[in-house]
Length: 192
Length: 192
Image (cartoon, rainbow over all chains, first blue to last red; front, side, top):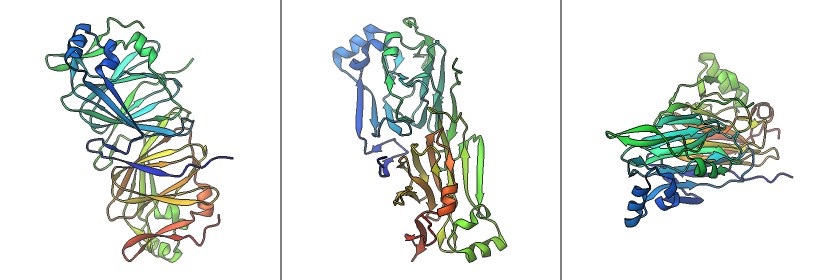
């Protein structure tokens, strides 16, 4: 017999992205992803004085089953490590056939995507941008502005997160500041 | 071999819900759902002078496969037929294990939900409300205010729409105006 879940609602402030109330809050400090930035000396220098919060994800919770939908609000704080903009760790879905939809709420960001075959592309996001991460694309977001970059994300609840592939190989491109602007440069450490 | 879809984006004005650009626009006039309202005389009188647009759905398009996500923006215009507020037709998902997430953008509405067993419940929605329609619940939205009720909806792309069950039995509850306020009353024609 099928167990029936009762309907429920939460609230998102569509101006600043505040989710009320989240079931779980994930915080990522620089020390949680120290190996992901290109400049080890800049990471080390930063960590000697402080361990900044790079991003935060507020999530709700539903069964991780086909048909259910998980959503979250991510805040990437403004900042750089050396010349490289603050970013999320990035991941593939374990169930790689699962897409994800992002809705920009505040700030400016890049959505960097990559396939297993090494195709790499990006979309620029701002308030109101609805970005589609198709199946089979790893995805990472980057704050390229001077205020928090906030977006709403929704994905099939069975998707799962594969962080390891990105930890091992990185993305093929990095987003760094040049003459005050964000630019994409090849990742020389990319093992893909 | 898996065909890789390229990433893409659209834009939603988060103040008024304008989706740019939609792939498909569905319009429902009163004549498209004349049998769904409780007062046949009020329907007939209205249709003698005009056939008002009750709601509109702007949709994007993706493959209707497990893992993909479909989204749309719905605008229910303010109005009543007799004392019954403008509403959508309402449907079950063909794949009943599929949930749906609604995000209120403008106006005020009710989200009316019902199971095959005849359980009936509702959530009130306004800007920022994120409502979860769990698997196995038919869902209908109703504009209970004086301005357009606008919401963003997202659901698994394989869900499908079963309108017929609702056309045959209706929902167990209707939303009508009493003393200037929306109230739920039992649907006497409910065949469930």
